[in-house]
Image (tube, rainbow, N blue to C red; front, side):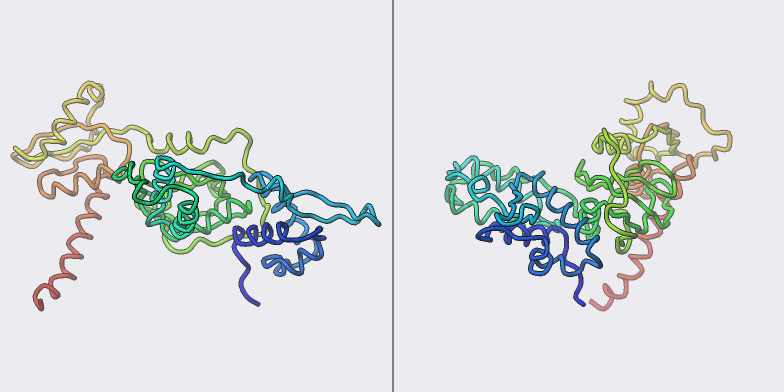
Length: 344
């Protein structure tokens, strides 16, 4: 048996069928003729899937109407009202088409880039010519690629289906399996985030998609959970990005890391009350010890790694370990590339 269709493709097939039916389609006709429903394990499973899809289409503004049989009032069928669904004549100005081009360009490098490109191509037919839409050229937004995790997570969030994946924590580098109820996906500060309920930790958590390693797999049936009322996914992401403020104690070589020194000076008042940890190791000779507030271990570790021997992390150990891992990875990469350079 072939693999089940993705939910988005099944919904599209349903819309096409209901738009093109001359009178109506019964549930049995939908089940047997619309691709995506023939994989339902039982009548109850089909009923749940169809009812969920029908409500999703209505939420998207697609007028799915119920039509009763003239002979049998309890014989229900469905179709899309063509008059309510049809778009009015559309004329797009150069500026409007330019904004749409920006929206499509936003998805370059993402899993939806092909869909965005096809949509923009169709809109160009009713809008200005491409050359007239260049008024917003050079403003293209960008997101870091979300990777292969985005598509299955979007489907799982739509179907309310639990997922499991391997995740690498930014602060400690710990890699472990997570079981999550996916609530929302949010794009923020150039990255993609999953907001959901971590079943092992029994609470809401935020996961950056770039730290998901390997495939995302679904667990159990669709409709397994509901998103709590009032959940503000963007606020949860913002809180996670701010994180808990900590203080790093760094030994900086003389006349090195000027930008880091300047930032430490600007925030000196904020860390004036901070006491060095009792086990703080001595600074190497010829270095100055600076205290720098930070919230995200990964970001500061990447910056410190760029200074190589110009900065030594004295504390905390989690930041020091993160820098050491990056330096070791750089050394290993150099060793792998060395034979290639020699042969070249």
